[in-house]
Length: 151
Length: 236
Length: 235
Image (tube, rainbow over the protein chains, first blue to last red):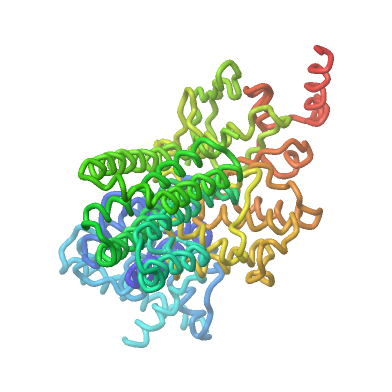
């Protein structure tokens, strides 16, 4: 059950950073679990993670279609847990990244999703996952340099 | 590099979710089993019932030392009282107007009645199991005869009682059951001498037959009580 | 989340108490309005699966009303109910919680939550026999909510509530009605107007109206009263 609690938080986080709406993110999170549990058992395996994130992503995409897309400025403006001042530049930097890059970074660094699980989610090789993550990181570092250059 | 990892993680902090607890609770298959339920119902059987029951047991155990003979008639006279307690317990839902709420729950009124009957039945069985050897030991009759003379008044009173609470409504039902039980008790107390004279082989056969019929009747009435909970609740 | 009532009927000998009622309900609060004796309680009991219909069916998301799984998502407050004599408010709720198959630990938590919700926390250990009518009614509402029901059926829930309690009840319904199907019956028109999203008016065992009431042509009160006048005119 502890796993479930933690996984709820993670899927919720995933959904929040796609929809930028607390209520909606929670609705989608719950729907994700309900849909998953309709046919499968909750385990800590890669397959579970794959299905959960896939369902969540698809549900978020369905939501997108209903709403207007969120712009870069909107993302930068979003209510946020601001603990450290130098997060301002990271906020700006991350908001400049592509949706895919943001997703990768969230999965890897915020949700601690393993390389194997990520390979399952994206249906690519582990090698490709590492490559993508490195590339996203590089782009982030580039944006950060640009941000810092303004100061 | 580590610092960047950390900063990324910090960035992806979402506002606190609000409905997690509730949701997860709704998922967990947190239910109690029927067996647990029956056990929990034991706690709801009235103290008075337990007290009276204990007194009956004490009576059965003590009586041989008080009266020098004719223990069995006293014991068998007490049996209808146990039957009355059992019927009374099963009747509480209706008497206290809890039946409707109980019916709409997962276990339902049915299970409540079943639980009570099972509990009281078991407890009464214990009483009977104690009563038979005691009576046989201090009496002049065989274990079979003693057994029958104890069990029969119980079964007759119980089946009659269960039938009455099913067909009669309101509080009068229970008074009627009490009256019937009292009648059977007195019958056993008072006819002791007469019965001793009919104590030939055939009498045991007749008693056996009555006991069997009463047992069947009791089981049938119990089943009908549990199945037709609707009937007993709103045909007022 | 859908409750489907299909040609539901109840006949006692020659008397038809409920006459082939069909309706589909989704999330929200539905008011069942009708005079006493119009068949409301009979209908509600059949919806709850505690009274067997003489015809028709009631299903919730496909589950039939006589199944245990149906009762598992059901919360019911009857028009009149009693209590075992020595019960305190807490005892009562814990007893019902056991019948709703809620494990002890969770039950204790839930009971405390609900007592708070209906404003009976400070009398939790007091015996129910000391309660006022309104307090007992609030306790009844609390027991109906123990198992977080998806279908909440309340028979005359506002009876005996003072104005303050009514407001509290209205707020409570507002929040519950968002996530489940609530059916409440009453013979008070203003209750229906204030508490429910849609109304079903019952007369002589069938619905003479169901849906959102449009005030523009006639007020609900006037319409409802006119139905009675019709009755009187016939006599």
